Length: 225
Picture 1 (cartoon, one colour):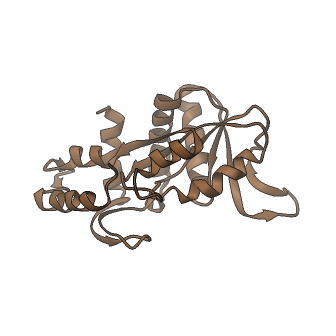
Picture 2 (cartoon, rainbow, N blue to C red):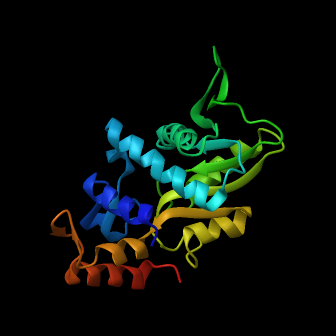
């Protein structure tokens, strides 16, 4: 596993973003883990988060894109901090863009926030986590309505590795099949479990055998094949 991935796993735990226990998800599923990207709140956390995203985007998509699109609302700060980190780490200025939930009809009008998207632009979408792929259903038409645009891919922080809306394959695989662009994550839950199972993180074992068994049981029911 690449160093930045193992560092990112520990960073999620230390930031209280990735939690383990018993949680009821929006879908109604009872999950032994939960991720809340809204818990990244400090300047240091956001700076590091942008760097992890930038490294993963560079590894998977290179420099072959122009705009980083973060869907409202959580995608807005993600796109901002990652464009800053990308310029710092790789010396390339990527433009950031997000959508508004409501179209603004005065001043800086329109549905977009940040950079415009124009003909010929190559776009990478950035999100926190994709469980079902529903948010892409809203995001995709907004981007494509801006002109002759190519979506290079989607980057999320964690691949939960659960079945998507179709109930057969994972959400990221569904996105690839439906929209024709690649979908990647900084880390997968397999990598999280591999790194944390019976290994101390800041002096404490996060995933012991009991929790590992609960995660395995969860994936027997909801895991993507």
